[in-house]
Image: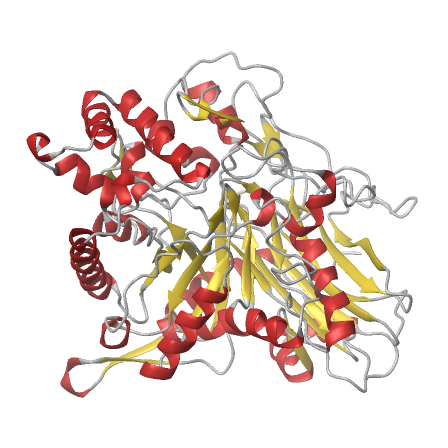
Length: 629
């Protein structure tokens, strides 16, 4: 079942491509010119969702590291975390987007630094004293600020005053200067961006906004505060105005939808009426990719929605009970609007009616870390915020210690990263890859995943330059199958393990389709798996479990099971040329320890039985779509 390409050779090739993908030369006048390759040769790793001390909540939680430390850390330098421990990535990232909240940017830091005698508002004075009292009291102060946010009342710490406007302008200018200094085309890409924190009384409709451009264009605007907005149209207006006035480009990435109470990917428009083709077009144009996994859980699929999928529900524990702030319970009927697989189905339903698919998006992972440290590695996880940086107490602490949120910190995932197939390590090439959706997500491990769709791929194609053939004869992840093909579509599927992480269990293709009666369906196909000397055979439509080598007491595992690479050509055996469909790949690792297991060993802990100490990390690709001619 497995088609071997030579794991060692592929690992060596991946290493070699690190230096060959970006052809860099010094141009006249000292400007670095980076030449794009003919097609993407190397996957680039990054984080599109990182907060620093400039974010109102991150500083309130105790974070004291700013954008410069965040960029230095992402580039592989050692920094000192807010709590004093040394922090360093084992492998640097290729790109980073610092997405500090536009709303109240720098406001908690400004309150903290203000002369106490100048504070006249009693609520602000209370928060000021709490932030200066102790880290625990600072967390409680932030909890109170979040409670005000959830109530819909004005937060005096983020009042829209002339002073706040001046502070925002100053911080944005300093931020852009820092980002430009650390952007090094061909080696490391630093993007301009911010978070548009759209939230209806706790229902998460946040977006990260990323610019393709440099300071010359981005300096003409400032981060957009959502104010009283309830829906994203105001953001789209901002993006359209920016592109029209500057000639630049900008995109928005919806956050993980699992805490939106069904509002992230609705079947209707905001008024509750049928979504129009124009509304669907604007959403599709401005939001080409979405976040499928991060610290606050995973948004791929839910067991209630996908009961026949044995691997659905990764990282959903605790996050499927209520919205982001825990103040509005989630109803089962709201779940479909919160998960990516259902959104992809809904997009086809809307397209069937309007001719436009609003949810034809690609997927990425990112961290949403509020520590300035972009690391989802299980053995190097610094938590959501400074209050849960490594310590003996963090696994059993509340998500925000001291603040009743209904969630425990052990329900946080050490997740995830954005993987981008770009033709060079530059803002332009990475942004363009995101626009064409040639991207995928992982929960942390750096698995190399390729996915091509076409009409005439054969197993023999894997003997030659199959990547070149994939681009020449088909479309990569994020694309749409060309019409006019004969028979059933075929797909090249390839997954290579992270060189320093667990072996691979299996690769699956998830198919979704809409029948002629307008009903949506899904099916999970195991397409290639580690054979274990031929002992794992497909039975009853499923592949047996791969096994388990995790030693929980030592937080170790052995790569004596699984495979270093899995590659095949698969054709849909149930293809119906008259119905719309999508296909995406899910790659599963063998079981490995969770960050809680590493904490248990490091701090010699006894943890409650409900805390998971092992899991199967994974990757999700962007889909390939089929539409009838």
